[in-house]
Length: 260
Image 1 (tube, one colour):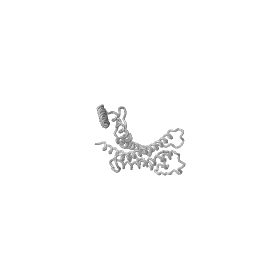
Image 2 (image 1 turned 120 degrees about the vertical axis):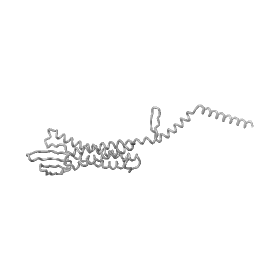
Image 3 (image 1 turned 120 degrees about the horizontal axis):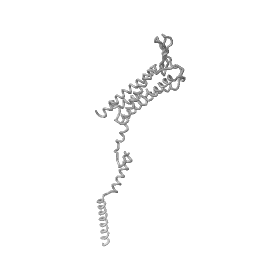
Image 4 (image 1 turned 180 degrees about the vertical axis):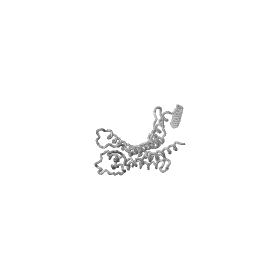
């Protein structure tokens, strides 16, 4: 199994992982149980309170639940707005990352050359990676806020616990970060290290450099000048003899003309 085949199967596996993570992050938006709390009053009556970023809900022991949307957008705290924005950005980036990866993967053969496909795949992997980081920040901040309020002895309001929506978000964002990181490493190595293969590497004792077009031209001129300056002794003797013979012929011609 060649290197290209291994990379192709790895890309397919990462695509499945990233799509699964994107689905998990999307599923947290309609999930109502991000936080939940149980309050027991009378023996036969138990109230369950749960909420997410969009609404608050309550249910009793009979199974009847009632949800109420957040009435005012500007009355919310800034952290709720931040979590909303980060999760929506994560979903959008992961969506476009899926499109770019489908175009650039080796098994689809939709794009152009190998280098172009590698660059497209690298862009899709970066979308996955950035989207996963955004989602991870949002879910981690929200979960840490619930934990700090629950552990704070001075917090007198009703205390909540972390619900299933936050755990789904942690799992989905982890899959996005993992798949995007692998995509970025594999595609980035192929897309950006191939530039050094256009020109050969010249090695001088103690130095190694990759010349550009201008340096190749100047290097050719330098080599020509160096060749002229470092001719062998035999060549220099032959040139000296030819110069002497030409000077002798010129002298003889001048003398014969003067005699005539």
